[in-house]
Image (tube, rainbow, N blue to C red; front, side):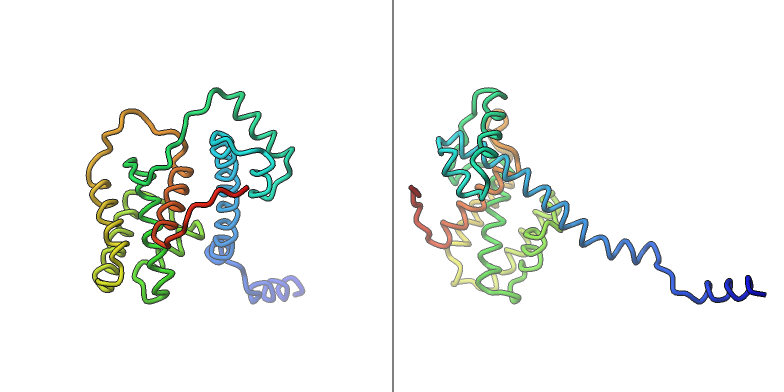
Length: 208
């Protein structure tokens, strides 16, 4: 009798389904994954800055890391072999570089027009690590940017010029021989920053 009561009581207790658990953990997994990817990207950026001749003290200040931690990364990088100079010219035509520039154009449009921008959801997804750069997502982002450029024609001349240059280069395979220096994520991040500063009229400064 008591067993029957326990069985009936157990059957009436709400159960957590696998689908519910998956939805609950999905956001946590995204945050953790994005954090791990960001840490890897920061490590790679330390190598880039060291190759550019920046002091370890300066890198530590900008990365909010201790100088010994930066020194460890720099020594490990130097032991791996001589550096390959990474160009900072905006007009490079490898896909990750172009994707970074496209991302910057979309982000500046989204910041300017907020939720009214067609590309805003995609920009937010990229920023939060919910969406990755693939041929499909890049094509989708291009379509959204094109819609915004048509909608706000006359207000986004600089964005239109940058997008047309990026779009033409994406449609034509890179003519550069070999693989450019730097990982895809580093090249994408650098191009994104340089293009965004160009659109926003930022002047490059050499921080002492």
